[in-house]
Amino acid sequence: MAHDPQGPRLPAARGPVSAAVRAYLSGTGALPAADTVAAAAPYGDDLQLALYLCYELHYRGFAGVDPDREWDPDLLRVRAALEHLFLTALREDTPVHASVDEALADLLVEPVEGAGVSHFLSGEGERWQVREYAVQRSLYHLKEADPHAWVLPRLSGRAKAAMAAVEFDEWGGGRPERVHAQLFADLMTDLDLDTAYGRYLDVACAETLATVNLMSLLGLHRSLRGALVGHFAAVEITSSPGSRRLAEAMRRTDAGPAAEHFYDEHVEADAVHEQVVRHEVIEGLLADEPHLASDVVFGLDVTGFLEDRLADRLLAAWRKGESSLRPASQESAGDGAAARPESEKVDIS
Image (tube, rainbow, N blue to C red; front, side):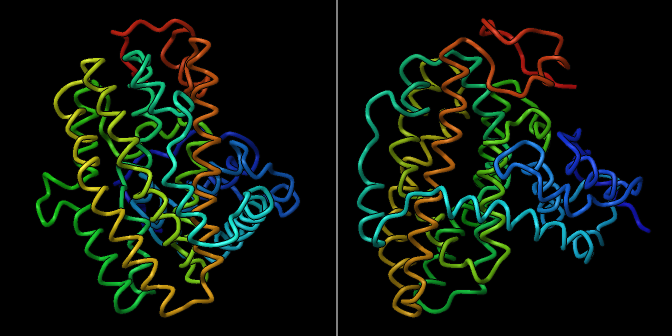
């Protein structure tokens, strides 16, 4: 069995399911039993980490893990069971709109002042909270646009051309220094954070993992292509106003020029992308496949559902002066959760 020396290290387990998946990937144990998987909480740390481990094999994998595990049939069966639990919960818990037009219209309504993470960070967030936000978001932004690329072979005509155009922008228009994942790495450098891919997986909360797992789930299943388009639209449509506030937060906390530039870039780029996605990608898809309208609505609404869960987690911690990172991070760093000074570096070894 060949072991891949590249990729991030395997993270610590968060329960019996993720422990068994981790052991299987490292060649030291068996996969979890079906009843163990069935007992996992859909939004909990254990299931979300186990699912993340399975999905990451389709991205860069993990150091010391055989690349062929990506298509291991036994592991895929476990992944399917985890996906079923997660997707069933999402379908049951997500309030959905009656139509695509209604869902899109609500996305254009700004949240109540101060209700979201970007409002909090721009108005009162401290530097340590800005840095924690970057740590949590690094799991998404360091693979930004990649999960959505899986939908390209599943689209045609107008929708495919428009989606490819937006993705080309996300990947820097052919210029590596302008790839959005690289721009976020530059932001992390300004904030004195480690830019290694997957570096902060151990400290990211379950709510963060769920937002990233959703993209992988929708991207890897052709049957969910409509929902992935909806997810992509939700991200692009809500990005510009939120990025404007986050750019203000970066300036107010002296995060640095690259940190400011990342969000300034998204204010401009995503304002354009919003129009392309709404009028070309979604309309093009539904012109070809009108039966996917309900899937697009689900993708739009489930994105907001999981983002709201993450915002609630972050704001509940920060408003008490506590860290939003998993407790293990504080144990590793040798510090407490509350009243972190601005100069403190997030350094998880």
